[in-house]
Image 1 (cartoon, chains in turn purple, orange):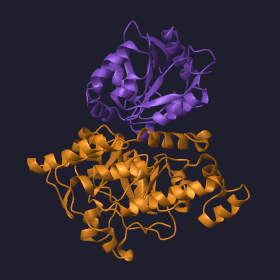
Image 2 (cartoon, chains in turn cyan, yellow):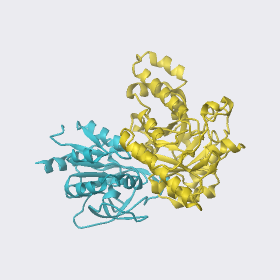
Image 3 (cartoon, helix red, strand yellow):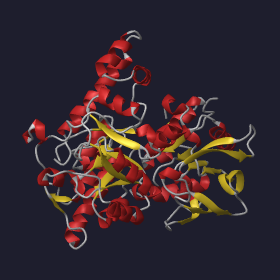
Image 4 (cartoon, one colour):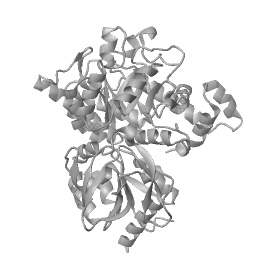
Length: 195
Length: 313
């Protein structure tokens, strides 16, 4: 697969942005790191990686980047994992914190506990190819999702991979697994948008 | 991500958390208020301690794991990961930290070593470990024992970045040398580094450590953080640089508003500089916001027997 004219950025202010870049590189797609307004305006789709959402929020509030990103996530294809998913949710609990509210979800941070409760599980998915290996690290839990949100995979009845329009979001880390179906799905979403 | 975390679920989870901390700042904190300041400033994690290295150095005595009560208070006060230190080889302290539920254990030379030959068998734990290293062999021995993160040692508690630089350069140089070595040379190099051949081969192939490599020890300013990131650190630990006034006196962030603001300004600036390490204009802008910097102690003035970095084998 090639970039198909896509300019995919990975938000690189904090977190496992390199793991996302490596995951896309594995399927032949080049990404570019995004830290500044100029870099954001040069991409057509964006990945919000895992990391610490409180850190990201603090760092986004600089030079109007958060304002531009708020608009970007509403208009362009977005792929968010873990902390990225928290940034996009409409409502964040445990504790309450601000977010871009682009995804109609209520999400609870660190919902399964601390690092000792992190786990790798196969999860049922509607994506072709059978269960997905899902790496949960101090993971959040989606407590409820609005009518426009499609659940693509779940764990114990709670959605863990969702899609709402051009936004694809996971509470786990597909970038830390070897299965590239989720990254490929995002490419399809981004490519459809490009047409 | 690396080939190393291909099979072992436990190790993948440990290295996975280390991946999440990349591009951030891990701050030493000694009380709840400092932990809150660190989180609010954008720290990716806090290290719960009773005394920061600058105080340990000044006060002497045996430095041990922090009181579990303090660690629990700090865990209850912030939502970011909480780390805590165990003495080198003191697996019982590590067991306690795991039982408390800390997110990362630092088997640290900053505390007084409990074993002069053996480090902790870190594979025996579900909680991930970070360990210090001054050269590639030391880093790979720690990884062989199960460390999920390496922090390149500087000289902790000094505010002098010189040894952090020296050891980061040493490790990156040794890794570069492996990448150009011939296959049959790797066996000998493994022996020279005192490290397992499989790990040496992995570094030769990848050009980097199989776990994230962070930097610690003597980082006191936004420019120090930017320097270490440009030299190859993936995250920085900042200890005495944020909450210390004079060498052995912490800023009073609980009662003194002016001193609190000073700590906040340093914490915020180092976080921004670490993210934007390659953009000097942003690092300059962050540096400008800093109120006061720890006085520090030139590392060259410390006798080798008094150095913390030489602990660990």
